[in-house]
Image (cartoon, rainbow, N blue to C red; front, side):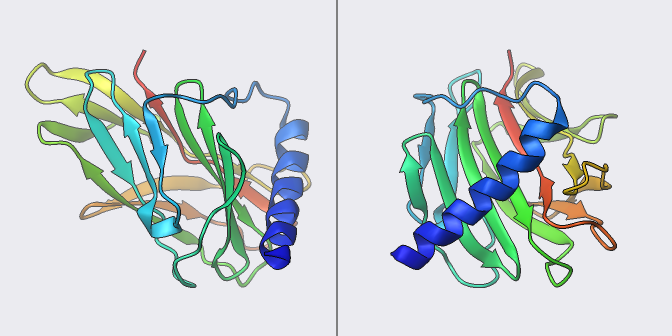
Length: 192
């Protein structure tokens, strides 16, 4: 348990340093009744949509299915989900964030998040690089994956973007030559 707690602390410190200095308003961490976390990375998270449906987003833990180190009900860390990679998972006032912390050049550049949508929901790509979750019956946006961003420890922007591979949301982070750690941010929100 000590190793997991030390790894969680290191991931939190790395993420905090970049997020604080980034200078943008960050989503507020808060319990949200529409969010339910699994205990392990591959169990992921269930999050509500505006129309009362659910989405399920898992973490493809290539290095093995990691248990969460729960720091508080709205904050958990999945240490070592891949080579040199941790994920700080946060419940926000309107959804979830999966702050991906890349610790070194051996880390992958593609991070896979298997996605399951309730029947009648679909993803609609947006010009910003994000995806709206759309209720097909009503044509209404009921959730949103904001376009991902990434930056390194010198607060330089790093190119990050989404691709869809079947039912997997793939975040690509081009961190070659970056000053580590690099922090990238998939963020899902219930459409307001």
